[in-house]
Length: 141
Image 1 (tube, one colour):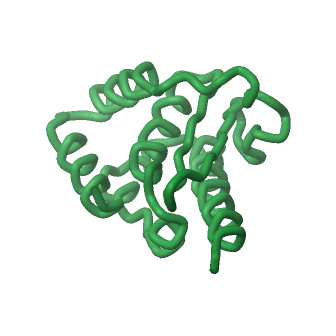
Image 2: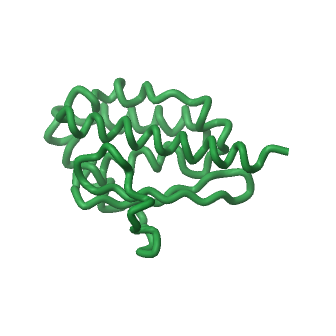
């Protein structure tokens, strides 16, 4: 499934909710369904800088695609990172680097986050793209 298809699915899912309390509840549920990051990756070097809460992000490369796992100590933040992982996991570095994150504006996420959480969101996306760049560079032929 392409990044754009996943993003469109997320936009569609969020459009089903009447208000932002329902959307927050949905994000919390997404966070609860996030596959647990292996505890060996919950290290300082996997913490995303710029997030108010602790967010651990780990990437692995397999058969031309990057797989992400993550965790957070805050329930909303865990939901946010769950959405990002859903969009970007199992995608090629090239596709991740070429993608946009317009779906975040389309679901109204950034405007409903506190400034510190919005900064954290930007930091998460930046870290995902940094992993993609690193794997792209490492695996170019």
